[in-house]
Length: 538
Image (cartoon, rainbow, N blue to C red; front, side):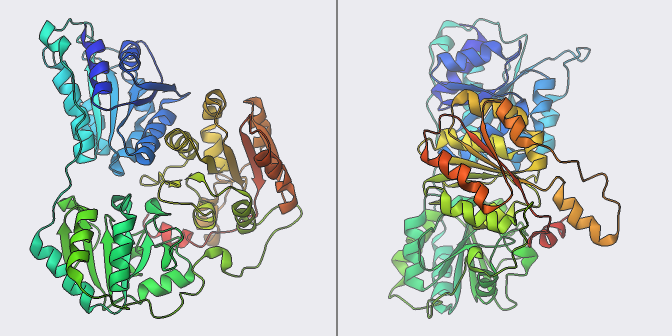
């Protein structure tokens, strides 16, 4: 067995069961060895798409996925997707062939690329250590929730392993739950007992912890909300406020702003989730619970930081709390959903209001859905108006704020949640940027609905710069028939200008769904409510 064979098999044995990539000469044998070890490989049409597919799969499956790329240009093509994964602390392994000779056309400093975007660089250094180093890459990804770039130099790949190393196997390594300090847990209990209007804000670190968080919230009378990446965690709970932050409805924002205690559970409490701090009242106490000590207070001042696993910390607080209190649950919440907020419908015969479109789609789509949302002016509409059944119902790859990731996100999420209808919500810019992956959707036979909110522009820039009287020629475009492009890839497609045009979607949903469907929705040109908040961070 040579190094390429051993590394691929060791990665699969360590728990990597899903691999995405684009195969070239440098990663051909590595990829085949992962498949031989039991992993499934999905070929993307671009390395950037493959990176985001792996990111989304890891998020929605709770496992470590892998990306495999060619040396040099294969890796650089994937860097935006890798940056998104690294910034989101997605446990993922990037397996990259590597040249060591600086005079090679394929040479780049791959270790420096990893560090530049916040990924962890690693390298296979010898035949004797190959299996151990491959295992260590998966252990770092899983145990530290990091995106790891595992460089496998071309001269090392064909080296034969010594017999004991070749015979070795790797065991999957899982992250141990971090037990909170008793004094910190006690301090949290005291704050919860004194609070009259507590609000829980659950982030990605709370996924899978709904039951214990709801039990503690009921005991202390807390209202429940989530960050965008944990959307759906408290779906159906009568005391759920939905998403906190830029996507929050007016009533949700009002209730959070009036809280006297805000507890962030596995949540960064960053500028998006807290609207640059505007959702924190002047007299509110802020608590943050995270199993990564470096996350505590990273984005804002907090009064109490607890290093601990969300589930364990909530369970300890629940056991110690005592008798149930009414807390913030003193009256009906009122309307906390955007779709219940009245608005002036701007639809015409040629353009549909994106709110009207989103509400109509929400009524049509089955409850069991997995939603992926690209970035852009439109993104608040599907995020806030399309319901999701739980925290595995929406994948939100927005840490790097790049457009063009949404379609690949939907592919990775669909493979991780195969029993749900995958829905990709894209802007026209992101759709055209990632159109090559329409082929991947069709080739995999995914019954996906792709909805393009098409305003023939980079809408975020239009609405940001138009008030200043700036020329907008650089960010507006002639109309494009995106439906025709989709048909070329084997999709069914419909152009939607009015609610009546959505009959084609209803027919597709009620049919065999033997081919994916794309909706080219010609949406009315208007600024979304969250945009002003978003641009404050630029």
